[in-house]
Image 1: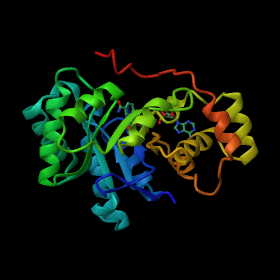
Image 2: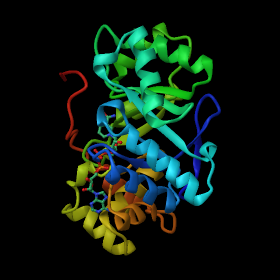
Image 3: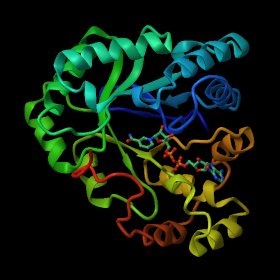
Image 4: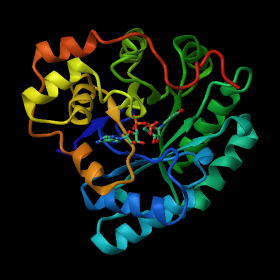
Length: 276
Ligand code: NAD
């Protein structure tokens, strides 16, 4: 089901599926996207301070709650601390600013957005502090490579629960996923649809035709069968519906193998070892 959940290492339940709102304009557009998602059964929303749409996301949540009667506790809201705010005190205040913009009194998940060298360990300590106060139910990071994670773990009191990384058929992150599994850190994919650049792939097209599904649905289903949390982005209600319609078919082992073999270690986003 669309609201099926994975239990994170600390016992918190997170939906396998949700809406991403990167590059979604603040104001009515993001309000409407969030409402469309929740109306169609989505329960998880992924934003970040740097997306500059937390106010609209918060407004969308508020309106969806008023219109559908679902409760705040049924939703799973993620935000992230931006690079410029890394460091202990600045992460604590960035978190409060995000909460305020979202109009919420707690977050379900808070992530360090990028592994800024010399700063991310201090930010991790801030996330531990926030976690202990109960203002955030789970903590983690994004775009961390194995060596970044090892540095955090070495200094951590609380193990991360999530690492959100670029992950799609052309970048299947096999090695990183193995490390995360061994450390009970759940993997979450950003750009699960490779930001819309997979829709002419012949292998995917053949598999999609066989199942009478779209390429988007096949790729999203591939993630789920690999045990990956996904947050595809769309602002169009028909695509929001399409992307959530993944629970009435199954890819065969052979389909999975074929999609796994598309890997080229090809990134659409910045390299976590070399970004500004
Ligand atoms: P995505 O892979 O979700 O692709 C989104 C694009 O694909 C959309 O703009 C749309 O044009 C197209 N699309 C979506 N559904 C479609 C469908 N059914 N048919 C045809 N086209 C479709 O890319 P993304 O938005 O970059 O990633 C998803 C989310 O991950 C983001 O919105 C954001 O929340 C998060 N993210 C995080 C980071 C990070 O550094 N942590 C970076 C980028 C994105």
